[in-house]
Length: 296
Image 1 (cartoon, rainbow, N blue to C red):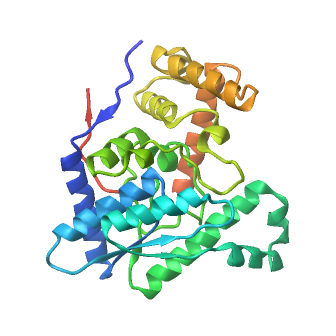
Image 2 (image 1 turned 30 degrees about the vertical axis):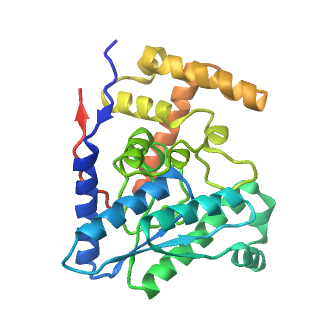
């Protein structure tokens, strides 16, 4: 069976391509810069670092990047600490605004959402998006999204009209693996680079707990599917079987139960979510940069 090819990049080249894309978007919209939601995770930290780098190198206009930290009680103190540390490291203006009050205010109109952890989590994401988009509007800036390729375009792991409601998607062409490589290149703290992904929308939530597999599996399955392999072939592929089996063992050890019964179920779940991602893209599809990736 043919090998699944994964992208590699030259970080200097790609960081420049992303930076120029952001500058073109800001210039075309006649805005004063960008706002970004800082969570303390690797995606938002990398997005902020790429934009700040581009703005610092651009001398034709004084563009500004502003970071907004918008926690609820579900967020850990470490999330806020790491987000502040990233803002300080980059030297950007940042503000901390707890959004527990506006979330609670939604009980007046959407009490039904509070009966479901899933719906409440998505509502929190939409409240956060409302704050960010209003800040951007009042400051004449663009909302820079922080979703990566695996999350947004691979499996659609975001809230429609929530964290997907952005003007541009700077890291939308980078898999989670490449985001971590870019973060390391940009000098982001290794603790953040290797942090466990979490949306922070549900108690004890992590992406691995929700999905039952990591983003390296998402990348392998979606790349393999795009390279012409069928679901049956992907289910037998040694590049996929090994990490899926290792992650299934880890999931069982951590959560005390099996999430899937074998590789075929994992592949089917990724492809099901991939179809959902495509349907979401028909509704909201923020522009992403054209970047130079090499497959060999």
